[in-house]
Length: 128
Image (cartoon, rainbow, N blue to C red; front, side, top):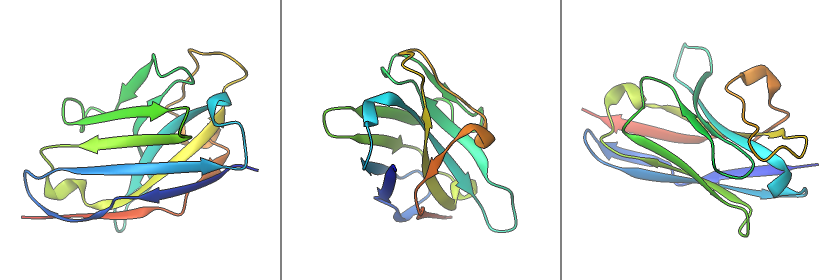
């Protein structure tokens, strides 16, 4: 059973930066592709970014492309989300999630319904 714990959220001004971390335990982290999703008040949870098992493939939502960067350190069982040039519309609870990659190093998924494990979320608030 994979357990995911996010950290690094907080309050930041428009244009600022935050780095989220997601630590994994209880499973073979290097066997999972990872994703970040977010949910703003009154809205559905949405895809933000994902990264393949090897880290060689990444995808981003158009709304964050060029501002956010996902990375992973398989030795530390951790995935990161570097968020720069933050905007008020980035305010949301951010969740990391894991999907089994079937031993395919290039596997990734942008589909929320494919992810098997979820963290509890971390709040990001961007003030204007």
